Length: 105
Image 1 (tube, helix red, strand yellow):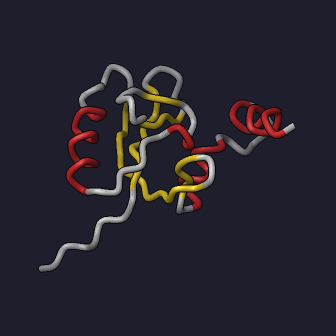
Image 2 (spheres, helix red, strand yellow; image 1 turned 120 degrees about the horizontal axis):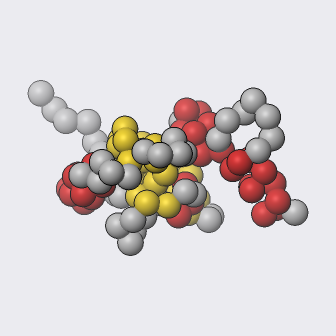
Image 3 (cartoon, helix red, strand yellow; image 1 turned 60 degrees about the vertical axis):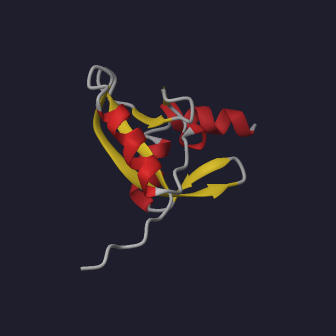
């Protein structure tokens, strides 16, 4: 059985206390912005960092690899689900959505 080719990934999870979406950075720490996440282009590097991130159960839950591509300002989500997670809840204007809007002003 052949293995699917590896596509670039970021490591993402939810913060244990707040529930906010967080991302694993190149500095091996959790950050809140998708654009600040490390983009892994090799399976071995992604697997090694995933193991380290996944061991931090006192900080993060639901650690997973998510497809991403390199954009002008850092990694960008590929799938709608990850784009939605990166921008936060859509029920009203708050949190990450407000931060993104004020940064662009």
